[in-house]
Length: 269
Length: 269
Image (cartoon, each protein chain N blue to C red):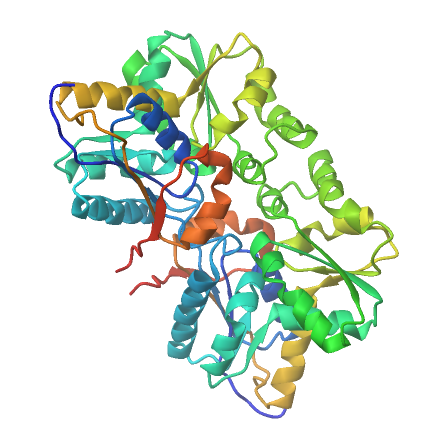
């Protein structure tokens, strides 16, 4: 990278799920400082209204502005669905969302039929479907399904047991022989990728938006000359709207051993 | 009832679960007007910190004060655990919580051993255990278990299927032959009472705090002369901190056909 823009990248999610995105960005861009915001006082976003999710997202944008973030990543599918346009229009830095990243990645493989899974909010919005239809000229066959139990299963740490497998069958059997690609439309789902792949069958390509958005951030920082200069070690800071101790406890499963200071930031003030 | 105190009773919860309490109070006291507050912008409370849950509860108390409520019911176990003392100390009306109601009801049956199930927050707090120990002189054998998947299972409407039964076994088999009474320490759980009773065995008495607190409200209104005079029909008003439409949609399973206006009330303003 040519430049030496040392400002941090900002990543936000309603809680811990976005850490799957954080992990991929960290891996893909090891020199970049990252500020992660988890809106744990409002978590999860999946069952909140578009208005509330947009309002929360705009408050997080203001916080990132204060912190002089150079690029903002919406690691939450629900916020990417409801708030991305407002965030992009009202920010003078690039704002990338997991939904666009997932859609772009899916289309690269030129599937004929595509499945989408996510929270009730994400699926109900029809946002993936609209974007996929627009980009493909409505040629793609689409099938989507809300899988609300996947998030609590991940948070319970039941990544591979009989119950999780039974739930996966209940949600995913409708895709049997109907799709050649499946988009994981929720940041918790990559932790269930093995069981999901097993249930939908090996022939189905599974798109992990966390990996896709990390690749996009890498391209974007290169294109816009936003890359940080090489240095000793990058710094990672975590902010949450509820208790930092609780976040530390609840996020173990996502953290892959990353260490970083977790601070509280109240969004109402 | 002697008096004619027409002020409403206030009931709050993080979301829909407290409607199990609302339903019982409505059944037990058909002449009383009720204001229900669901803090849906922060739902669920079970994975939030004590400080945040207390702060939210105090804001709801202020709203109830504005609405001239005569008695306040904390229908959320997590809020009953974390915030009840502060609410009681800072209110000039009676404040009743589901935890105390559940404990009192359990002790009435003089069990030798008692199980408690609830969210992570409720169980981690050890609040039921402390209260049961204090009241019984630590003579009771206690065994508790957090069952975080029960809430999303109820919200998914899976009240009786193989998956819910398997989850119930996973959580509850530790109680086998160990308890003679089980407290449902979460307002969603009464909707799973059949499956829970089946799994813990018919010999175990299951305590539904919603029923217990409704009985307590009845006694309290009689004792304190707070009862409303008999009249045509009681009025029910619902306030939520997120979208009213979304609440209507999500609460169908709890509402038992009750109709009432749902309005938005932002807790930050």
